[in-house]
Amino acid sequence: METINFQLPPLEAWVATIFRRAGLAEDHADLSARRLLLADITGVRTHGVARLPSYWRQLTRGGLNPRPNFEHTWSGTVLVIDADLGLGQIVGPKAFALALDALEPARPFVPFLIRNAGHLGALGSHLFDVADSGKVGFLSQVTQPVMAPEGAMRPAIGNNPIAFAAPRTDGPPLVIDFAASNVARGKIHVALRDGLPIPVGWAIGPTGRPTTDPTAALAGSILPAAGHKGLALAMIVEVLGGVLTGARPLLSEGGAPGGVGAFGFVLDPATIIGRDAFDQGMREWTRHYLAAVGDNGRIPGERAAELRAQAKRAGIAIERNLFEQLVQLGAEAGAALPA
Image 1 (tube, one colour):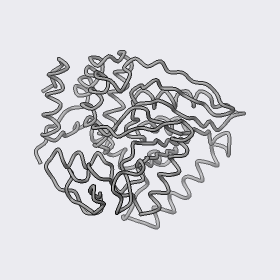
Image 2 (tube, helix red, strand yellow; image 1 turned 45 degrees about the vertical axis):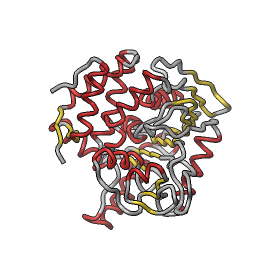
Image 3 (cartoon, rainbow, N blue to C red; image 1 turned 90 degrees about the horizontal axis):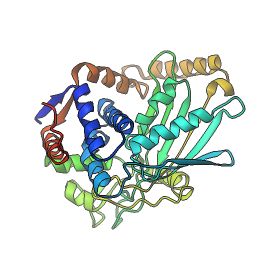
């Protein structure tokens, strides 16, 4: 498949310009560009610059608020954030910054709820900074109904992703990021864009039967990972990020509607168990794990660190079809894509 390579600095500057043309304040545009491309450079290509055309439409035509007024309150010991339909690449960093600021010796664990947010994108991208600060973080988000078991005639529940991160002293942070589905719905959009079939086991069509046609899959439902276990995980997130926040995101053409609810937390292991004890415990179990699996596995987060280093040197490759969409977006926004 033909690709076009971009160095990160000019591409990031262009994405920031698009966000500014969509109405974001300069600091928010810069932050959103960095956070959006972080998905690309850590291997989550479905949630990076491929989402920019959809975000542009929602910011300029309704659905997302380019100038949100963030508000936060406390409900007991739970931090509650109203994001005012802000772009998720702004909301995620804001939520974690507030939660981290609230940590103190008497409060080493801060849970938070996010209401009324834009789609948060690649959840793991919001957790690298948390782990780098020596803290543990967790984030889960409800999505629009896109998933159902085989035989269902319409989507029943969101694929409701979760992410978790913890610091390590002998390697990059542990970062886990996955949805409750067999595959991200964005990968089906990519297959449709590129004119490719999808593998069996990814989705069912509107008749409830398995399909390899991305058009039928998008009209049907994606399948849960591990059968009933994936559905159960999605249901847990539905309670934490949906019922507790009142979020009911509806299906949208871009697959990333506003009105998202989320649940997360940060904790300070130094206060809870002691920094040295925590670091030793992390080293012990990860070394045991790696010794057991040998060359057959790695600690989640290691590949992302390798890809980040590689992207800084070599940039990122964008598929021809996506490149053409970005060119059109640049023409609409009056900001030509850099050569």
